[in-house]
Length: 397
Ligand SMILES: [Zn+2]
Image 1 (tube, protein in one colour):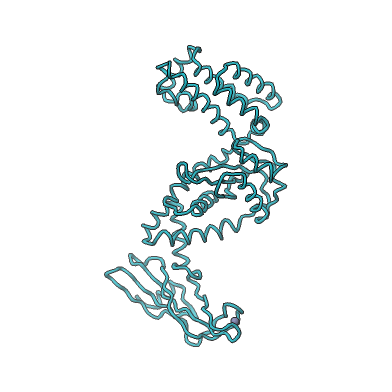
Image 2 (tube, protein in one colour):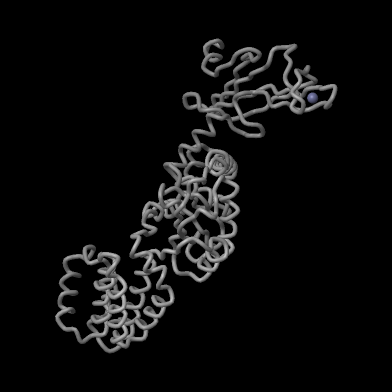
């Protein structure tokens, strides 16, 4: 190839000159050598003064492939002799970031691929160690996402937790309810995550005192953290988490009853799934069960529609309706249900707020898929920071 043509393609201009191209056809590698003109001066990395070159060496970075060849730029990198600061390496080329193994364009390609596939797959696709690619990825997420977050208008926040792997480390994820973007991800699910979020808000232009509400699950540690650091914010318990508690209670009732009632075997999901998600067969079985109301499982199940109904009524009528639902539930005299009712009573304010405001973490319905995607994108993620950064990456559009 004509050197001039390639010069233009690579954007090489004064003081840079394209010196040489070496190909290794067997390995399918191209090395491009870029020098600066003799006598060039560059700014000292400390004081910025135009300074003469002391000596130089080549820095080799991966560039975008050229046809099906891996392409490397070998860029002459000077050490400058500043009479004030002494001899220092200067980062003066425009193709790469300081101390990166890759050109800026190659890094951008690797980040784009992360939107489409797991880091492991990106590593195979590009033929680069995933450790190096994670380093680039984390740099990008830090600069482009985390450092650029502007949290000054955040008012309503959803908090969720997720496990990195089944039952392993947990991370807490804070989402802006109004924009649906992930604004903070931190290891752990103890109350301390709220103190960390408090500091994070200040660091990113936010005002902890202006947070109006948190939508979250009923965990004691989240509640304690919220109380301590965001005393004036309302708590809204996430509807999904409340409903999960009721479903678990119903399932326990069934598990107890299945000992004596054979027909209840293998019916778990009939009682737990949303009716609209049942198969035709499951619907039929459910209808057959509902004809006879003597089973505890059926009685417990029937509490569900009343509970769902609470979310549909006008907020003024809600208190008496809740009371009568609780009475009805307690009348069944089933231990698992009683336990659930107790937790409803203990958390009544946050549950009422959820009903009255209609706010749920389902804003983060998106978030659920982000968390799932993060787990698969970050497969073999090596450390929890990588995993957290993947959540930021996927949760910011
Ligand atoms: Zn200097």
